[in-house]
Image (cartoon, rainbow, N blue to C red; front, side, top):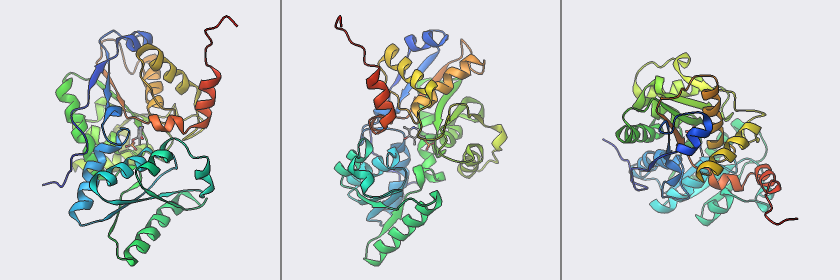
Length: 326
Ligand SMILES: *Cc1c(COP(=O)(O)O)cnc(C)c1O
């Protein structure tokens, strides 16, 4: 039994990427992109699949307000705001920093505001303080007679991860002989759900630096999701694309973004999906992914975050090519 609700039209497209494949040294038919960036709610992205389950559960328990946390450029927060609007629920987003951080707000913050979400600025404490602040917001809401439901960081509970068991099964129906699925690993629920559908051997996670211990995080979620004891050491995780850390621009990621954009007209973001392609490229270089092996890049979205990432915007605009004979 499930209380899953429908927040988009399924399945998302699966597209061949022959020019990108060739640029990477793969065969023309080897590389496909699963377009979860085209999910039709709120600007799209992977968090919608999780929200179908978590917001469904919130409605079933009689909640009237969704509360969640993240960075100010969180795609998960933006999509929680959109899902709340669609489901007729109030939304409070708990972000680190102060209201002054919103003054030059861009990217996801613009959309959070359009979707009518309220922002609670939690100050600049330790990351764990954000969870405490969210609990406080829920307590205040309860005192004022509301019924809040706290959606976990990144939507990555075992329940939310079921959205990517659905996503993995959808992909298998589209491409039964898929050998590798490459995905950005943030809070871990997307990779965990994919493993639930495809098994450990076929899913390659590219760590983005959002959690301290990605293997433990994904193994814990996968174990809770599947009821099998999944060992952290059995997971395929690359940690070579974190660079200076979560949210920073890593040079190979900008290169990967340019390659996808110039060969296929596909936009990736600097925090997640660009790291996934950079990881895929390095996996081809070191032989983990080989010519002739059906490979899928899961495009998890993140376009609004590109416009909220000051350094990427600056670097991209600086590289604008002029056509005049200046
Ligand atoms: C959150 C996010 C991810 C990572 O998904 P997790 O389930 O948190 O690991 C990847 N790409 C984008 C664009 C995201 O917003």
